[in-house]
Length: 230
Image (cartoon, rainbow, N blue to C red):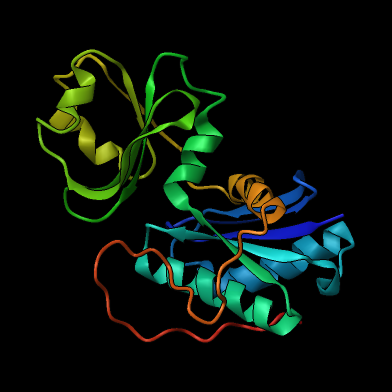
């Protein structure tokens, strides 16, 4: 039996999830701006209590590594690393965009490409493009959106754009009949945990001492200290 606690804080929303051998036990989602530092650790404590799980029973912590919000990723990573150090357990890091695509596969049309997007301010987004079976067609990149974006894909195939970066792309891509936009999709700790179970089985762990979030763009800031669980 392996219990994995997953943390997702890459956007304005945050979520946590608990999986046992890859099966979801419980999750909690908070849709409040700038809520990570205030609610993350109390939410973890609450969810563990609801599930009747002691911190000593957790086998690994999974964290959404980015790309995404600088502050959100730092808080999630600091909390995850603090738990791993304190409990003496392993850290698993999952690409945020890959987790979004994984969670969307059951909703997607079979012949459509998937393009999860995270807002990177102004007209820039962090994005990836996935084909059938989550085959990566375009790796993670920061992209400034204009009327020619994704032209090589949109010419002959539909693309589903989703995530909090997709809304601002509608105006630039509305002339493309193959561009479809899905609202209300955010990164989710449930999907982080599902992918983390595969990594756990393969013993694919991060070096807790050196691990840093995948900011994608240069950023210099002080690291926040990780809150402690009670």
